[in-house]
Image 1 (tube, rainbow, N blue to C red):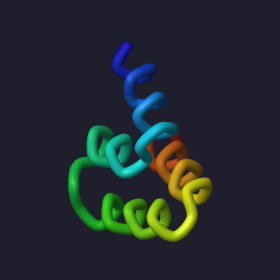
Image 2 (tube, rainbow, N blue to C red; image 1 turned 45 degrees about the vertical axis):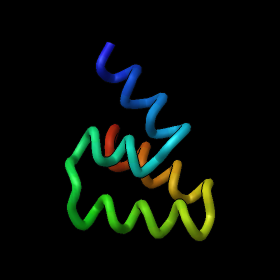
Image 3 (cartoon, one colour; image 1 turned 90 degrees about the vertical axis):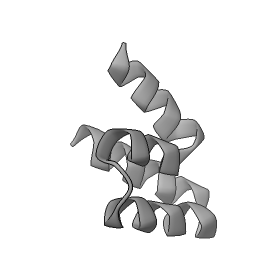
Image 4 (tube, rainbow, N blue to C red; image 1 turned 180 degrees about the vertical axis):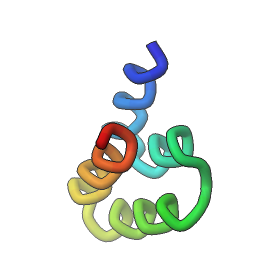
Length: 52
């Protein structure tokens, strides 16, 4: 159930998904910038960070 919530958060709000999975740090900031510049790279980065 936790992975499902993490996946949904990573797709809808990528920085939230990264924050839930890895905490707030450098990875979160990278994802925030990617999401603000282009949404799709932010989603891909969030899924990669949380599930690879």
